[in-house]
Amino acid sequence: MRQVLAPSAVGSLRAEYGPGAIVIPDQLVDRTSGRAQTYYDIGGAVHVSFADPYCPAGRSTAVATARAGDWETVDGGTLVVIEGPRFSTRAESQWFAGNGWSIVGMTGFPEAILARELALCYTSISLVTDHDAGVEAGQGVTHDEVLEFFAQNVTRMRTLVSETVQSLPEERTCSCGSALDGIKLPFELP
Image 1 (spheres, rainbow, N blue to C red):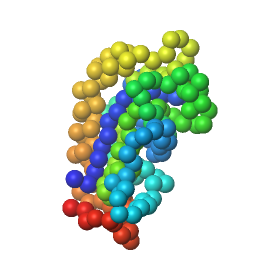
Image 2: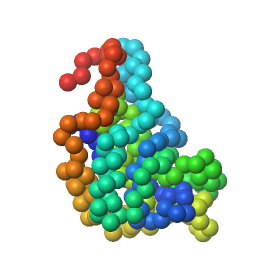
Image 3: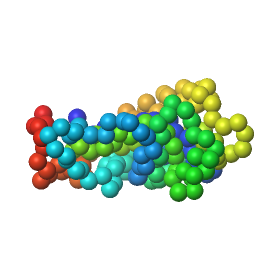
Image 4: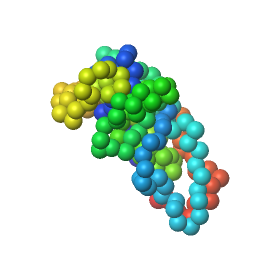
């Protein structure tokens, strides 16, 4: 395995990304706390570049596949990952949007950095299930609404992930596989 595709349900921080849109983010902001963020916490620090957290080849393949499947598709944007399990407050949601971030979810970090630390490609495929609390007036996001919307789209999402896997290039054309080049690891990877 060299490529990780990570489907997830997210809230939109932008009015123009409505429920049903697929966002393939190119950036990520970590707003979690207490999650293990490295495999290399013994035997010395290992610093891996994370400037661009997602695989460009995986991203472009996912975008093309989503568009071919008639999804409303957003190429790029920033996923802000929150701790959960609670949803954002209205003030948090407005702050996230004010920073220019696009979508909010509870998964995707630390998974992305852990994949990079193993020199794996990582691509987020984010299904917008709702507008986050600060985007629209009203009572905000509910658990049942998110689950219901995701359930209505799970078959399409499975198809999108499957077709993306089939469309990925045989050989890596990205730099993800060289993330550990020149770094002395505290233990040997399989």
